[in-house]
Image (cartoon, rainbow, N blue to C red; front, top):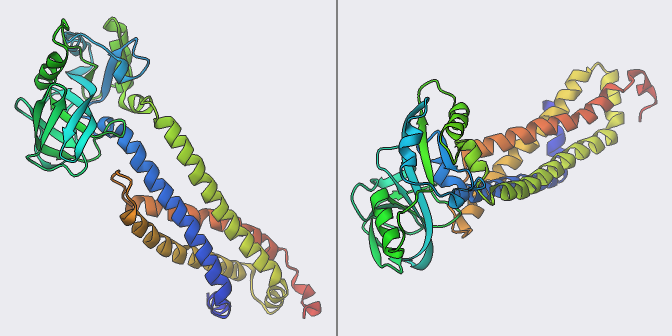
Length: 365
């Protein structure tokens, strides 16, 4: 360790530039990962925080809740399937609305209070329990605000604020199913009935969600069951966003590892005569390996601190309209991954050190 620190002090510029380069690469990984997580959550938050183990769509929905149409009595049929503890209707539509910040598209969900399908992520206030009340995940919304649905001019009073409960990256409001039906009837007065889009299901203790989903599809005609993970994965746009950001993050991560690995490989080659002399004077391969490993750890640790501060500052200044945050779990996972793979690439340097013949020290200058 003393040798490693001595070399780093004597080569401050070299190690400083490497630390700066690694800092920028880790910053890109953290920044892109945070943006990716926020964007995906804006598409899937409504399902991720939903109180349900299984969602049931019509079998003609093509795995999309917005393409599903079910009659209201489907809820009772699903509730009668073995393994189902409780079931609740869930309906959704996209409409235009007048918000406090202006006119905007609004995703509206109707659910049965206390039944499966109740939204999660409540940060302030309460969930709706009376007609024309709503809990909303809308930027700059406040308790007591009024949301006007267009063109019916039905007014909803915000009684609760949600976080991470948006759907399709749009402002999202949750109302009780009776209020949802009333709004839909006002917009379509000639409709014979207001369909629901899904049935949310909680399974009995010990029952497999995937088995219950399959049983519902085979028992209740015209339906298809999905576990929550499957329903989330099938939301349009989620897979493409995840794949795009995954490629960007992966390439940045690989570039960072390659930079660290080649730097220490070149550094080891340049110091080969020094290492040879140290071997000849009694230094073991393990001692020299610890020197390289310590330097890699120090570079990654310092770069991670700088990158975390840069990422936090960048996320505070960026205006994406999404609730982007830097979680300690993300920082920890990225730093540990960079450190481990950097040590693995540093094994190329270790192999060079192990191949040194101490007897060759006599010819070293």
